[in-house]
Length: 320
Ligand code: MRU
Image (cartoon, rainbow, N blue to C red; front, top):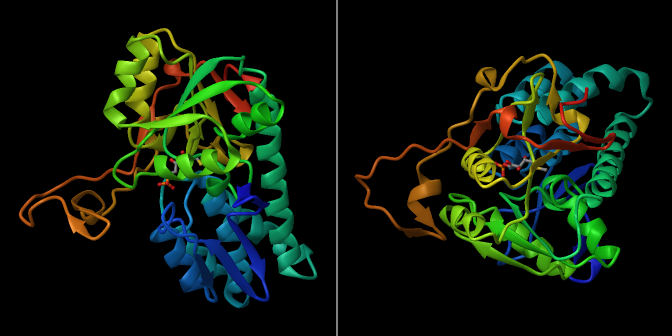
Protein backbone atom coordinates (compact mmCIF):
# COMPACT_ATOMS: atom_id res chain seq x y z
CA UNK A 1 0.00 0.00 0.00
CA UNK A 2 1.23 3.52 -0.72
CA UNK A 3 1.62 5.73 2.36
CA UNK A 4 2.78 9.24 1.50
CA UNK A 5 4.60 7.94 -1.58
CA UNK A 6 6.22 4.90 0.08
CA UNK A 7 5.22 1.25 0.34
CA UNK A 8 3.86 0.39 3.79
CA UNK A 9 1.65 -2.01 5.69
CA UNK A 10 -1.28 -1.71 8.10
CA UNK A 11 0.54 -3.72 10.80
CA UNK A 12 3.75 -5.62 11.44
CA UNK A 13 5.81 -7.22 14.22
CA UNK A 14 8.95 -5.44 15.38
CA UNK A 15 11.27 -6.05 18.34
CA UNK A 16 8.76 -8.11 20.29
CA UNK A 17 5.85 -5.71 19.75
CA UNK A 18 2.97 -5.36 17.26
CA UNK A 19 2.90 -2.05 15.40
CA UNK A 20 -0.40 -0.86 13.93
CA UNK A 21 -1.37 2.12 11.83
CA UNK A 22 -3.95 3.60 14.21
CA UNK A 23 -7.06 3.48 12.01
CA UNK A 24 -9.07 5.42 14.60
CA UNK A 25 -6.97 8.49 13.76
CA UNK A 26 -7.06 8.27 9.96
CA UNK A 27 -7.57 10.13 7.68
CA UNK A 28 -6.72 13.13 9.85
CA UNK A 29 -3.48 11.85 11.43
CA UNK A 30 -1.09 9.07 10.52
CA UNK A 31 -0.19 7.67 13.94
CA UNK A 32 0.93 4.27 15.15
CA UNK A 33 -0.26 2.14 18.06
CA UNK A 34 2.08 -0.36 19.74
CA UNK A 35 0.80 -3.54 21.38
CA UNK A 36 3.24 -4.95 23.91
CA UNK A 37 0.88 -7.44 25.56
CA UNK A 38 -2.02 -9.71 24.63
CA UNK A 39 -4.37 -7.29 26.37
CA UNK A 40 -3.03 -4.41 24.24
CA UNK A 41 -3.66 -6.51 21.13
CA UNK A 42 -7.21 -7.36 22.27
CA UNK A 43 -7.83 -3.67 22.94
CA UNK A 44 -6.55 -2.78 19.45
CA UNK A 45 -9.04 -5.20 17.88
CA UNK A 46 -11.99 -4.19 20.08
CA UNK A 47 -11.44 -0.45 19.81
CA UNK A 48 -10.79 -0.77 16.05
CA UNK A 49 -7.22 0.50 16.03
CA UNK A 50 -7.06 -2.39 13.57
CA UNK A 51 -10.13 -3.50 11.69
CA UNK A 52 -11.19 -5.45 8.62
CA UNK A 53 -11.42 -9.23 8.76
CA UNK A 54 -7.99 -10.30 7.39
CA UNK A 55 -6.16 -7.55 9.32
CA UNK A 56 -7.87 -8.69 12.53
CA UNK A 57 -6.63 -12.21 11.69
CA UNK A 58 -3.09 -10.88 11.24
CA UNK A 59 -3.30 -9.02 14.57
CA UNK A 60 -4.47 -12.25 16.20
CA UNK A 61 -1.53 -14.36 14.97
CA UNK A 62 0.88 -11.78 16.37
CA UNK A 63 -1.22 -11.63 19.56
CA UNK A 64 -0.65 -15.38 19.89
CA UNK A 65 3.09 -14.72 19.67
CA UNK A 66 2.85 -12.19 22.52
CA UNK A 67 0.88 -14.71 24.59
CA UNK A 68 2.88 -17.79 23.68
CA UNK A 69 3.46 -18.72 27.34
CA UNK A 70 -0.24 -19.46 27.85
CA UNK A 71 -1.68 -20.25 24.45
CA UNK A 72 -5.09 -21.47 25.64
CA UNK A 73 -5.75 -18.30 27.64
CA UNK A 74 -4.44 -16.08 24.82
CA UNK A 75 -6.63 -17.85 22.28
CA UNK A 76 -9.65 -17.45 24.56
CA UNK A 77 -9.02 -13.71 25.06
CA UNK A 78 -8.47 -13.03 21.35
CA UNK A 79 -11.57 -14.97 20.29
CA UNK A 80 -13.67 -12.87 22.69
CA UNK A 81 -12.76 -9.55 21.04
CA UNK A 82 -15.14 -9.39 18.05
CA UNK A 83 -17.58 -12.16 17.14
CA UNK A 84 -18.38 -11.74 13.45
CA UNK A 85 -15.21 -11.89 11.33
CA UNK A 86 -14.25 -15.52 10.69
CA UNK A 87 -10.60 -14.62 10.00
CA UNK A 88 -10.05 -14.00 13.72
CA UNK A 89 -11.06 -17.56 14.65
CA UNK A 90 -9.30 -19.05 11.63
CA UNK A 91 -6.07 -17.23 12.53
CA UNK A 92 -6.10 -18.21 16.22
CA UNK A 93 -6.77 -21.86 15.33
CA UNK A 94 -4.01 -21.73 12.70
CA UNK A 95 -1.56 -20.65 15.42
CA UNK A 96 -2.79 -23.35 17.84
CA UNK A 97 -2.20 -25.94 15.09
CA UNK A 98 1.14 -24.62 13.80
CA UNK A 99 2.97 -23.10 16.73
CA UNK A 100 4.20 -26.47 18.07
CA UNK A 101 5.92 -27.32 14.77
CA UNK A 102 7.88 -24.07 14.64
CA UNK A 103 11.12 -23.34 16.49
CA UNK A 104 10.06 -19.72 16.73
CA UNK A 105 6.31 -18.88 17.02
CA UNK A 106 7.00 -15.69 15.09
CA UNK A 107 7.87 -17.80 12.02
CA UNK A 108 4.35 -19.28 12.03
CA UNK A 109 2.78 -15.83 12.44
CA UNK A 110 4.91 -14.24 9.73
CA UNK A 111 4.11 -17.12 7.36
CA UNK A 112 0.38 -16.53 7.99
CA UNK A 113 0.66 -12.81 7.29
CA UNK A 114 2.76 -13.22 4.13
CA UNK A 115 0.25 -15.80 2.90
CA UNK A 116 -2.73 -13.49 3.47
CA UNK A 117 -0.94 -10.63 1.66
CA UNK A 118 -0.18 -12.98 -1.24
CA UNK A 119 -3.81 -14.16 -1.34
CA UNK A 120 -5.06 -10.57 -1.42
CA UNK A 121 -2.71 -9.78 -4.30
CA UNK A 122 -4.15 -12.80 -6.15
CA UNK A 123 -7.69 -11.55 -5.42
CA UNK A 124 -6.57 -8.33 -7.12
CA UNK A 125 -5.22 -10.18 -10.16
CA UNK A 126 -8.40 -12.28 -10.47
CA UNK A 127 -10.81 -9.40 -9.85
CA UNK A 128 -9.05 -6.97 -12.16
CA UNK A 129 -10.38 -8.88 -15.17
CA UNK A 130 -13.91 -7.74 -14.21
CA UNK A 131 -12.93 -4.07 -14.42
CA UNK A 132 -13.42 -2.59 -17.88
CA UNK A 133 -12.31 0.85 -19.01
CA UNK A 134 -14.65 3.68 -17.98
CA UNK A 135 -16.54 1.57 -15.46
CA UNK A 136 -18.01 3.19 -12.36
CA UNK A 137 -17.77 0.90 -9.35
CA UNK A 138 -19.33 1.19 -5.90
CA UNK A 139 -17.70 -0.17 -2.75
CA UNK A 140 -18.86 -0.18 0.86
CA UNK A 141 -16.85 0.20 4.08
CA UNK A 142 -13.09 -0.24 3.71
CA UNK A 143 -11.87 -3.53 2.28
CA UNK A 144 -8.49 -2.19 1.27
CA UNK A 145 -4.92 -2.63 2.41
CA UNK A 146 -5.75 -1.19 5.83
CA UNK A 147 -8.25 -3.99 6.32
CA UNK A 148 -5.94 -6.80 5.18
CA UNK A 149 -2.29 -5.74 5.95
CA UNK A 150 -1.72 -5.01 2.24
CA UNK A 151 -3.60 -4.97 -1.13
CA UNK A 152 -7.09 -5.43 0.28
CA UNK A 153 -9.93 -7.62 -0.95
CA UNK A 154 -12.58 -5.43 -2.64
CA UNK A 155 -9.97 -2.75 -3.36
CA UNK A 156 -7.23 -5.11 -4.59
CA UNK A 157 -8.72 -5.34 -8.13
CA UNK A 158 -8.75 -1.52 -8.21
CA UNK A 159 -5.04 -1.35 -7.38
CA UNK A 160 -4.10 -3.94 -9.99
CA UNK A 161 -6.33 -2.35 -12.67
CA UNK A 162 -5.00 1.14 -11.91
CA UNK A 163 -1.37 0.03 -12.04
CA UNK A 164 -2.14 -1.60 -15.41
CA UNK A 165 -3.38 1.77 -16.69
CA UNK A 166 -7.12 1.02 -16.77
CA UNK A 167 -9.40 4.04 -16.38
CA UNK A 168 -12.34 3.65 -14.00
CA UNK A 169 -14.09 5.59 -11.26
CA UNK A 170 -14.93 4.54 -7.69
CA UNK A 171 -17.91 5.52 -5.53
CA UNK A 172 -17.06 4.94 -1.85
CA UNK A 173 -19.97 4.75 0.60
CA UNK A 174 -19.30 6.89 3.66
CA UNK A 175 -20.30 3.88 5.84
CA UNK A 176 -21.78 5.31 8.98
CA UNK A 177 -21.34 5.11 11.88
CA UNK A 178 -17.53 4.61 11.84
CA UNK A 179 -17.06 6.18 8.40
CA UNK A 180 -14.71 3.52 7.04
CA UNK A 181 -15.47 5.08 3.63
CA UNK A 182 -12.99 7.78 4.65
CA UNK A 183 -10.33 5.07 4.99
CA UNK A 184 -11.16 3.96 1.44
CA UNK A 185 -11.00 7.62 0.37
CA UNK A 186 -7.55 7.92 2.04
CA UNK A 187 -6.25 4.75 0.39
CA UNK A 188 -7.53 5.68 -3.09
CA UNK A 189 -6.13 9.18 -2.70
CA UNK A 190 -2.71 7.71 -1.81
CA UNK A 191 -2.84 5.60 -4.98
CA UNK A 192 -4.26 8.33 -7.23
CA UNK A 193 -7.44 6.44 -8.18
CA UNK A 194 -10.29 8.81 -9.18
CA UNK A 195 -13.21 8.54 -6.76
CA UNK A 196 -15.84 10.28 -4.65
CA UNK A 197 -17.34 9.58 -1.25
CA UNK A 198 -21.13 9.42 -1.15
CA UNK A 199 -23.59 9.33 1.75
CA UNK A 200 -24.73 5.76 2.45
CA UNK A 201 -28.29 6.57 1.49
CA UNK A 202 -27.21 8.02 -1.89
CA UNK A 203 -26.20 4.67 -3.44
CA UNK A 204 -29.72 3.94 -4.73
CA UNK A 205 -29.87 7.36 -6.39
CA UNK A 206 -26.67 6.71 -8.33
CA UNK A 207 -27.69 3.16 -9.23
CA UNK A 208 -31.09 4.25 -10.55
CA UNK A 209 -29.45 7.02 -12.60
CA UNK A 210 -27.22 4.49 -14.33
CA UNK A 211 -24.06 5.82 -12.66
CA UNK A 212 -22.93 2.51 -11.12
CA UNK A 213 -21.83 -0.40 -13.34
CA UNK A 214 -20.67 -2.85 -10.67
CA UNK A 215 -20.46 -3.24 -6.90
CA UNK A 216 -17.55 -4.93 -5.09
CA UNK A 217 -17.51 -5.37 -1.31
CA UNK A 218 -15.49 -7.41 1.15
CA UNK A 219 -16.92 -9.92 3.63
CA UNK A 220 -16.41 -10.79 7.28
CA UNK A 221 -17.76 -14.33 7.06
CA UNK A 222 -19.11 -16.32 4.11
CA UNK A 223 -21.16 -19.40 4.95
CA UNK A 224 -21.46 -22.72 3.10
CA UNK A 225 -24.47 -21.56 1.05
CA UNK A 226 -22.81 -18.26 0.04
CA UNK A 227 -24.64 -15.93 2.42
CA UNK A 228 -22.24 -13.46 3.94
CA UNK A 229 -21.80 -10.95 6.75
CA UNK A 230 -20.25 -7.60 5.95
CA UNK A 231 -20.35 -4.05 7.27
CA UNK A 232 -23.82 -2.78 8.11
CA UNK A 233 -25.47 -1.41 4.98
CA UNK A 234 -24.05 -4.03 2.62
CA UNK A 235 -27.37 -5.90 2.50
CA UNK A 236 -29.33 -2.89 1.25
CA UNK A 237 -26.64 -2.17 -1.40
CA UNK A 238 -26.94 -5.76 -2.63
CA UNK A 239 -30.75 -5.55 -2.85
CA UNK A 240 -30.50 -2.23 -4.69
CA UNK A 241 -27.94 -3.67 -7.11
CA UNK A 242 -30.23 -6.65 -7.80
CA UNK A 243 -33.20 -4.36 -8.38
CA UNK A 244 -31.16 -2.24 -10.81
CA UNK A 245 -29.53 -5.19 -12.65
CA UNK A 246 -26.03 -4.27 -11.47
CA UNK A 247 -23.52 -7.08 -10.87
CA UNK A 248 -22.57 -7.47 -7.21
CA UNK A 249 -19.28 -9.18 -6.30
CA UNK A 250 -17.88 -10.22 -2.93
CA UNK A 251 -14.09 -10.36 -2.61
CA UNK A 252 -12.52 -12.50 0.13
CA UNK A 253 -9.70 -14.95 0.84
CA UNK A 254 -10.27 -18.53 1.97
CA UNK A 255 -9.81 -17.47 5.62
CA UNK A 256 -13.18 -15.67 5.43
CA UNK A 257 -15.11 -18.76 4.23
CA UNK A 258 -16.68 -20.61 7.16
CA UNK A 259 -17.80 -23.99 5.86
CA UNK A 260 -18.96 -25.04 9.34
CA UNK A 261 -21.96 -22.72 9.12
CA UNK A 262 -24.76 -23.52 6.68
CA UNK A 263 -26.34 -20.10 6.22
CA UNK A 264 -26.14 -16.47 7.23
CA UNK A 265 -28.88 -16.98 9.86
CA UNK A 266 -26.27 -18.62 12.10
CA UNK A 267 -23.73 -15.78 12.03
CA UNK A 268 -23.39 -13.81 15.26
CA UNK A 269 -23.70 -10.09 14.59
CA UNK A 270 -21.69 -7.76 16.77
CA UNK A 271 -23.61 -4.84 18.29
CA UNK A 272 -21.37 -1.94 19.24
CA UNK A 273 -21.75 1.00 21.59
CA UNK A 274 -23.94 4.08 21.48
CA UNK A 275 -21.03 6.53 21.19
CA UNK A 276 -20.28 5.42 17.63
CA UNK A 277 -23.60 6.90 16.49
CA UNK A 278 -24.06 9.69 18.99
CA UNK A 279 -20.61 11.33 18.91
CA UNK A 280 -18.45 12.41 15.96
CA UNK A 281 -14.92 13.69 16.58
CA UNK A 282 -15.77 14.36 20.24
CA UNK A 283 -18.87 16.33 19.23
CA UNK A 284 -22.27 15.11 20.43
CA UNK A 285 -24.68 14.93 17.50
CA UNK A 286 -27.49 13.39 19.60
CA UNK A 287 -28.99 14.40 22.95
CA UNK A 288 -28.02 12.25 25.95
CA UNK A 289 -31.55 10.78 26.21
CA UNK A 290 -31.44 9.36 22.67
CA UNK A 291 -31.27 5.59 22.63
CA UNK A 292 -29.68 3.84 19.66
CA UNK A 293 -29.10 0.38 18.19
CA UNK A 294 -25.78 -0.17 16.49
CA UNK A 295 -25.36 -3.50 14.68
CA UNK A 296 -21.90 -3.50 13.09
CA UNK A 297 -22.71 -5.99 10.31
CA UNK A 298 -25.61 -7.36 8.32
CA UNK A 299 -26.24 -10.54 6.37
CA UNK A 300 -26.69 -10.61 2.61
CA UNK A 301 -28.43 -13.60 1.03
CA UNK A 302 -26.40 -15.45 -1.61
CA UNK A 303 -29.13 -14.83 -4.21
CA UNK A 304 -27.89 -11.25 -4.55
CA UNK A 305 -24.27 -12.25 -5.24
CA UNK A 306 -23.08 -12.38 -8.86
CA UNK A 307 -19.73 -13.90 -7.91
CA UNK A 308 -17.08 -14.45 -5.24
CA UNK A 309 -13.63 -13.06 -6.08
CA UNK A 310 -11.05 -15.24 -4.33
CA UNK A 311 -7.35 -16.02 -4.60
CA UNK A 312 -8.34 -19.15 -6.58
CA UNK A 313 -10.47 -17.33 -9.16
CA UNK A 314 -13.94 -15.84 -9.53
CA UNK A 315 -16.77 -18.25 -8.72
CA UNK A 316 -20.55 -18.14 -8.88
CA UNK A 317 -20.75 -20.21 -5.71
CA UNK A 318 -18.47 -20.17 -2.65
CA UNK A 319 -15.33 -22.20 -3.20
CA UNK A 320 -13.80 -23.93 -0.16
O1 MRU B 1 -16.06 -3.21 11.53
P1 MRU B 1 -14.98 -3.35 10.51
O2 MRU B 1 -14.45 -2.03 10.01
O3 MRU B 1 -13.89 -4.28 10.97
O4 MRU B 1 -15.70 -4.04 9.28
C1 MRU B 1 -14.96 -4.30 8.13
C2 MRU B 1 -15.75 -4.85 7.02
O5 MRU B 1 -16.93 -5.06 7.11
C3 MRU B 1 -14.99 -5.23 5.79
O6 MRU B 1 -15.76 -5.04 4.63
C4 MRU B 1 -14.60 -6.71 5.88
O7 MRU B 1 -13.95 -6.97 7.09
C5 MRU B 1 -13.73 -7.12 4.77
S1 MRU B 1 -12.14 -6.39 4.95
C6 MRU B 1 -11.18 -6.85 3.66
